[in-house]
Length: 224
Ligand code: FE
Image (cartoon, rainbow, N blue to C red; front, side):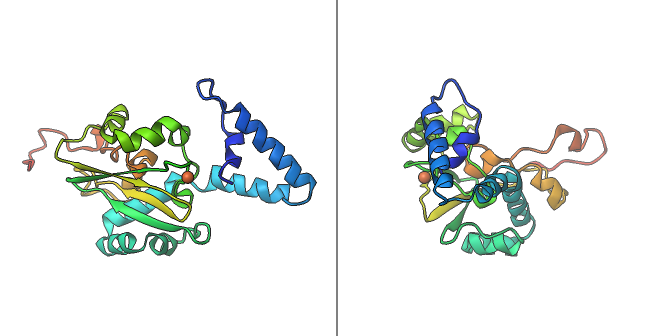
C-alpha cells in the first residue's frame, strides 16, 4: 500500500509524481486483471486510510495522555497496546508504535529517511512533504532549520531528537500540553493536537484567545 495511495493524491506541479502515478495505475490494473488483487478490497483499504483513519485518532490518544497520567505511562511503555486500549483498530501486524514525549528540554521529530514509513494507524496517510527527498534529508541534517520553516522556533538549549521510522517501528510524538489548558475537557484538548505536532514539526496549538481568561475579571494570574 505504501506507493498505492500516491495515485490518489492531487498532482503538484512542483513535484513530478506523474511517473509513479502511472506506474501505480499500471501495477494495479495488472494485479487486478491477473486476479491477484480484489479491486473492492483495494478500494476499502484506500477508503479506510483516506477517510476513516486520520490524525483525529492520534489527537484523541494525545488528549487522553494529557488528561490521565496512568494512561500516559502505559502509552510511553507500549504505544501499540495503549492505542488499541482506546478501541482503535490495531495497525498492520508486526508494526511497533513507539510514542516519544516532548518536554521543555527535549523535542522529538519523526522522519523516514528511506521512504515514507509513517504511523498510519494513528495519523492516516502522510502529507506530501513528509515523503519529499528534501524533508527526508534535511530533517536529519538540519532539524532546527526545518522546524523554523514550519514556524517552530525552539530555544537553543532544547535538544532535538530525530527518529528514523522503518517497516517495523513507527513513531508518534506526544507534544507538550500547552499552557492555559488546565480546565479544558479531553475533547477540547484533542482539538489542539495537530497532525504536524504529532510528527514533531510543530507544537500543539494554544487555546484560542477567546477561550482565555479576559483581563480585568478580578483574578490574579500566576506567571512562572
Ligand atoms: Fe519508509
